[in-house]
Length: 277
Image 1 (cartoon, rainbow, N blue to C red):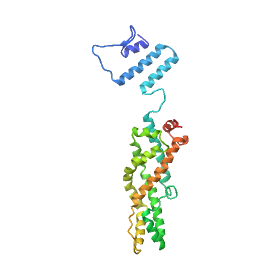
Image 2 (cartoon, helix red, strand yellow):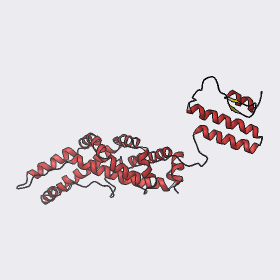
Image 3 (cartoon, helix red, strand yellow):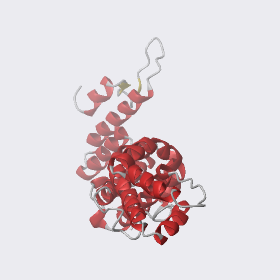
Image 4 (spheres, one colour):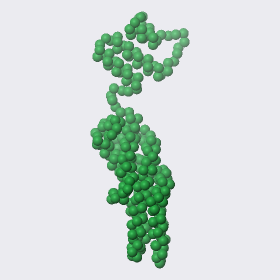
């Protein structure tokens, strides 16, 4: 026997009086994966029996789609959307880190410049009266330098948080506002990221001389009569302000990636966010 009939026989069908399943002495349960494969081959075999080139192509296309688990509608799957959102955050984070993790990335940007903590405003006022305000100016510069130094080192922490996003998280983000993913990221990941960033910022503060600058400021301040005690947690302050700056620009990057084809630098980004425009 030749042609499509022999194919059917080989996959388990009789073709003497119409095709029907071959039954052996014992019924066998065929695994679902093999069943899908068999059905795909069956559709391919039927396409040859039809004889029309157009019909044959249609059947073959459907068979291939069936075997690959795809539909002919071309709709993006939840997994693809999730991957696209994560890709957008990775691209955005990469761009933001490159922008902020360099000299004057924070210090020269009025949108995210890190000021002195409010707890030091009284210190600044007192020292200004005795001509020592430059010590506070130096400390402020070094706080920004610490954030600039810590930003590149924290990139892998942000990427890990992106990888940990679930498909359930994705469902509420894809159709959300232009910064929906950033809002989710900020709300869910700020606390654990802050804990992970603490040793990084501690090291950066020491590295850029902010700790020594603060000690110099407080030494001069305590030398003044009748001044109150000051409690300033520089590490926590720089972490909070540094993350605010990163999220600020990450939201802008996300919005641009969603809308601007030029920013959609990978095929997956173009497929996912091109569907929204």
